[in-house]
Image (cartoon, rainbow, N blue to C red; front, side):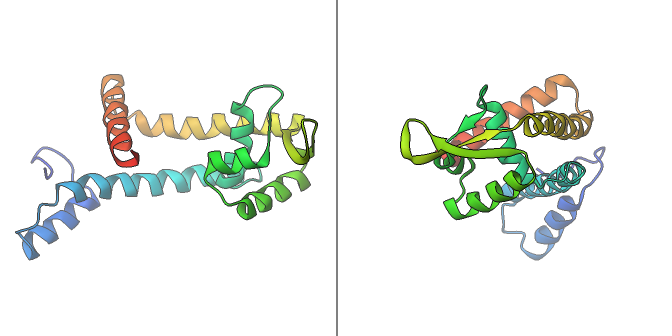
Length: 169
């Protein structure tokens, strides 16, 4: 599955070539895919982290704001549901909520349906920031995808969906 002669080579090609030289018995097809997925995720993650930093938030904090934003009006969820959605421990979630609440981006209040529970709600500023930050992140992702035509972007999304479902299932 290595690069065809007319294709430009990337750093993963160099790694594959080294393994082919040192261990020609290995089938490195999976390494070609997952090496690129990993490098792409790291590169885009770093770019997106920088974009969110302009708003004074980290990627993890954006995830909290975005989860509340996606939940729809009134942009309120219990902390447990946020933790489950973001696959965070309650301790990890508490730290993020503390920072975002101190910044005035969300507020915690008693749950009117559960005396022992809390609700987390986006403030107007949190809603505004979430909308701006998601736009900035999507702009970076769209710019990166502009290297592919629309049909190839759809094909890539479909293939990655299949692989994700197969590995998460």
